Image 1 (cartoon, rainbow, N blue to C red):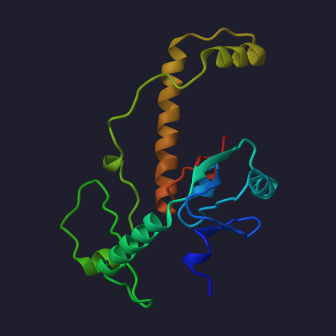
Image 2: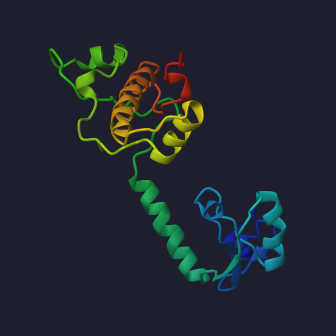
Length: 195
């Protein structure tokens, strides 16, 4: 059985032990340093082995120093104390589902039983935020170029505001369609096809 007397941690590449109070290397890419991943390497050459496997485009080996045996033992005791203080969740239990609250008028507050059984309704016009930018959404030069190439006509600057209002209305319809399909992302299929 592996014990702390053999070393601090094993190298993620060669599996040799990294000693206490000894230099080691970590990857500069954050995904390699998450709590669940926590890759450590005993040398730069061991770090280099993992780079093509993880397909890093831009990364480096960062030198660190392992804790002393005493500091490591203290940290483990503290971790064990925290785990003991945290109430255990049995394997069969799950966290309660979160209730999504939608803005908009309601006739009466729903009970918890009703809230869990009823499907979310479509986003009403009143539920859409009124605090939105009213900037021009059209690239004027591109539009004018299109109209000129298509018909030889010029385009008034006032057209941009009118078209922006049309685009906002189309977006509002697409938002409602995405919400009815219980999605948080508006997709191309949510917009009506052009005639």
